[in-house]
Image 1 (cartoon, helix red, strand yellow):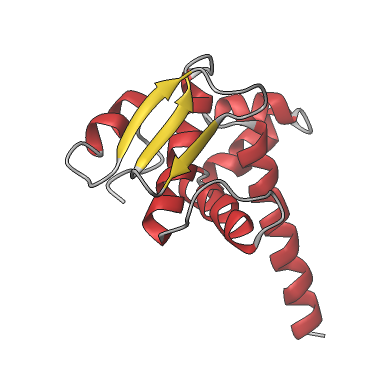
Image 2 (image 1 turned 90 degrees about the vertical axis):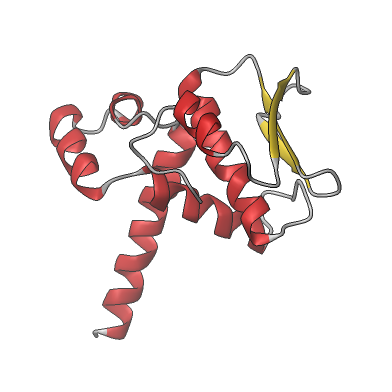
Length: 141
């Protein structure tokens, strides 16, 4: 993908011009922040979101497109878990996270804000870290 964690939402939108996928904003049903429609190669993002949330949703939906996923999946599906993990890895810098954690202790809202991410992306990253630590303990025991 032609995007990285240092980019704003606007920069990401400009970076994907020319890809065979279109990103548009719309008023989506309550609770739905974004979705990817594979049949039309269109990403829809709820226009009522903050730019930070739009940035995270665009990254998430671009990853669905990159993997050829067929559209909106249930939250427990393998493709959704993969996409959430990859979104967190793409948007969260470990050094910046460590600094933000020292600055804000356990204030997850402030940490997410400092990292220009959503709570979902932050908690997905932390869950991935915890899973890695558990696997490391099991395999190194």
